[in-house]
Length: 455
Image (cartoon, rainbow, N blue to C red; front, side, top):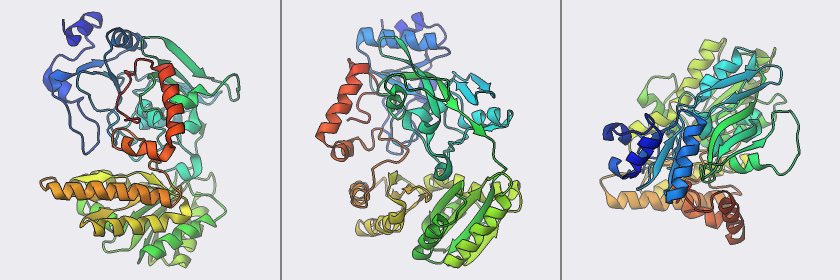
């Protein structure tokens, strides 16, 4: 019998038998994905933790690779199907339990980020991690990559909100990490080991997440600068403001032009750069955005727009949220996700464009200026092998440029398949060996998401 028929008998109604439907689970959002044929992998759509247990027990017994999969928004190829593998989708595990007294949410991995935010808001609470893909990405994927997003400058990343996890290990064993209490130091922090592990250790089936009091509706400032240097002066000026913004986003000139080509979001074309800044400080948001506007004007902004209400604020920010689809519409690209010290951001953006010019390519550079995490893109001609090779060389140059600036090859997207070749160099042989030893403890057969992260 085939793997598909075996699992179909063990998990009635959970295994995808229609090849057209299975094809939809072949890739994530990685632009360079090369999916296998739909008859070369098996898709299991789990509806419960028991379904995950049965799948991982079968996989371990037969030595079959498993690719955990959520809503497939990863841009690094960490969740695409592999030949001969079981693709284990958790998108239907969508339970949400809010405890307003303890200020926690207990959720399934398939819960969409914005759905959790809405559920928490009904209790006057907030779940702060806010990826640009929040309306599509799942909590399981956020945990797997330690996702950050637009509000990290004030609120931090996913790891700062995960108190505990329920994880099914290869072989079907269920383990629980962490706690539901506000404090707890019993044993090692195994929750932290799983956050950011990109499906290489086990499958998260439940997460206990910390919530915080809901802030005021955020207000937004849009500042337009004539040059890159002036834009970076704006970032520096915000670092001197006493009230920390809840969001500081950067779009360089080419990013602004790409957004405006995608739709009219009110951004001026031909600028040197744009900063979007928000405050949600209770009772002080309107005061804060006026202070930010004054600081940005003093730093050299030629145009500053201040939202007077939530609707205007959301409209200004929408142009940032559509950046990724706008860049996708522009053409084939390599997406980077490097993070450098905030004080070196200007150097990073300048190097992005210098590298692109050196290789005969075009580039954009935007992202989270508040925490130094930017997402440069190199565009290439998919029909021209030399153009693709040039983009690959540019990608390598950029990783090394980030290292030289004191940074890292990924701030929030994870390593996936895309960046695995560079991980060994960033970590060093001794550290890589230690991490592989930890992986072997949880996944001795090496069946969890093989080839991802560690190559």
